Image 1 (tube, helix red, strand yellow):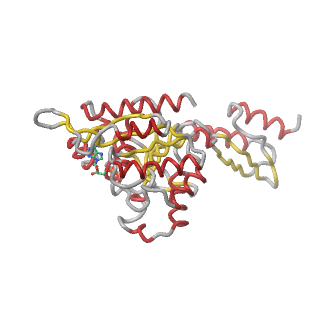
Image 2: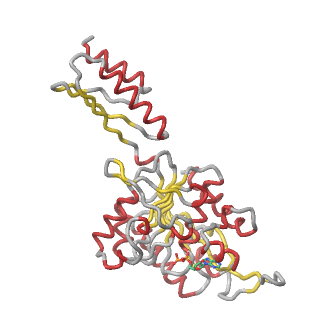
Length: 320
Ligand code: ADP
C-alpha cells in the first residue's frame, strides 16, 4: 500500500466514508467531504480531525477540504397564491412554525422579493445575515426558526426597481444558503404567476406546492392560474388551503361567512386536488401576526388549524 492509499483509508474511516479519496499535488492535499445531514458542530469537528490526520501524510504541506451536501436532503415546499393579500405569507410562516413543532427541521425563505413580510411576521426585522464562503447564513426568527428574506438584505422598498434576472439571482442566494440540517425549506412565493415565479420553479425544483386562496371567486380564478403554473412545471401539488374562511364573532362566537365559504374546497374537488385546510378569519390571528408572534407557536385556538395543516403536509413529505 502506498502512503497516499494508507492515508486515504485512514481519512475514510475517520469520516465514516464521507471523505473522497484524497489527491496530493505539489504539497497540497485536496479532498471532498460530503456533509449532508451533519449539524454544524459535528461537521466542524470532522473537518478538524481530517485536517489534522491529513497533515501527518508524507509530503503534505497544505490541506484543502471542499464540503458538499446533497441538495435532495432539503425538500422545498412552495407556498403560492394567484394574487396578493390572500394570507399566503401568514400561512407560510405558521406552516413553518407548526411543522417544526411536529419535529420536522424547517427553514423558511421569503421569496416575496418586492414585498417581503416574513421579517415582521417572524420578528426578525433589522437582522442582517452573515455570509460564509459566499453563502448566506440564515438568521433566526420567532421560535428559533432559521429564515432568510430580501427584507434582511436591502432597505424596505429598495428591491422594487429590480428587474427579473436580478430578482431571480437574489432569490437563488436565499435558497442556496447554508440551511444546515434542515429537512424542509418552506418558500413563501411572490404572489401571482410571473417570470420570477416560473424561473424559481424551474431552477429550484420544489418537491411540492401548496396553494392559498380565499373563498372569493376572483381569488379562486387566480388560484387556478397558480395551479396551472406549477402543474406545467411538473411540481407535485400537495393541495389547496382556504384562508379567511368564516368569521367567529369575538363577542358571541357565532360563525358568519363574510367572503362565503367552501368555494376553495369545491374548486379543489373540481381540479382533482387535495383540500388541506380551512383557516378562519380571525382578528386575534391578524393582531398576533402583526406583532411578530405567529399564532402557530402558541397554545391558543388560532394554532389549531395550522397544526392540522402541518400534520397533512408532514404526512405528504414522509410519504414521498
Ligand atoms: P399575502 O402574503 O397573500 O399577501 P398576508 O399573509 O400578508 O397575505 O396577509 C394579508 C393580511 O391579511 C395581513 O394583514 C394578515 O395579517 C391578514 N390575514 C391573513 N390571514 C388572515 C386570517 N385568517 N384572519 C385574519 N387576518 C388574516
